[in-house]
Length: 223
Image (cartoon, rainbow, N blue to C red; front, side, top):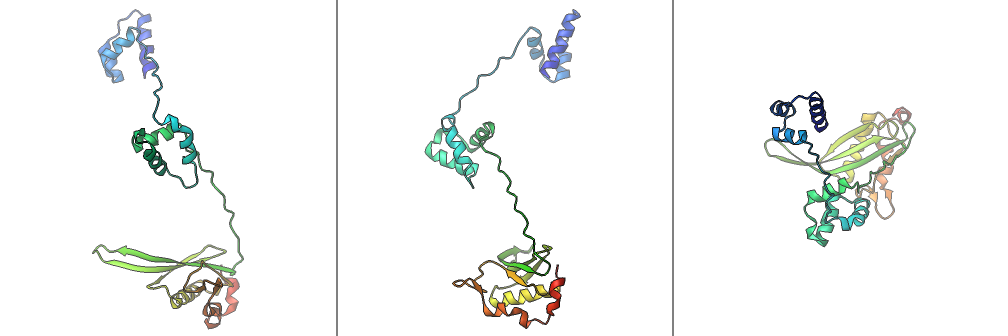
């Protein structure tokens, strides 16, 4: 906008026409006094770069802010504890962005682990979920999530508790839903079904296929 004002003033000057400051002020949305200043040759001086109280910590801030898991808030609190004169959190955030101290995180590509159809089922409990109804009633429950290794198809099964019997019951429901029994079951160390010392499944879970009515021939059809 400033360059447009100067150009128009120069054109009027070359045509030996007196500029109408009021019209130009309305056109560009600034005061007529400002138009008059530029018409008389006013040039805005470059502002001097102001120093910041954070300048002395610049290298250290850059180091801390790029540590794995570091946040701007956490780093700010660290330096504020060291020197309370550094200013507000908003000022610290502006300083970090202005000086590009936060390096862009490189995305890590995780190659997908392919499994054959009917080979693997991953499962885990989402524990102690709490929901509140519009009437203020609180409901607490658990969800067993199961995911097929090949197609990534999901199933969520409600469970009030998370005992060994609950896990087996939810898995049976999942097998019925998928239409077959998977060859391998993969999960974390769930205390209700895994022997923490030996890191192995309990006996009942190992023999789970034996207590199912579903025929084993359905394994290959589970996607």
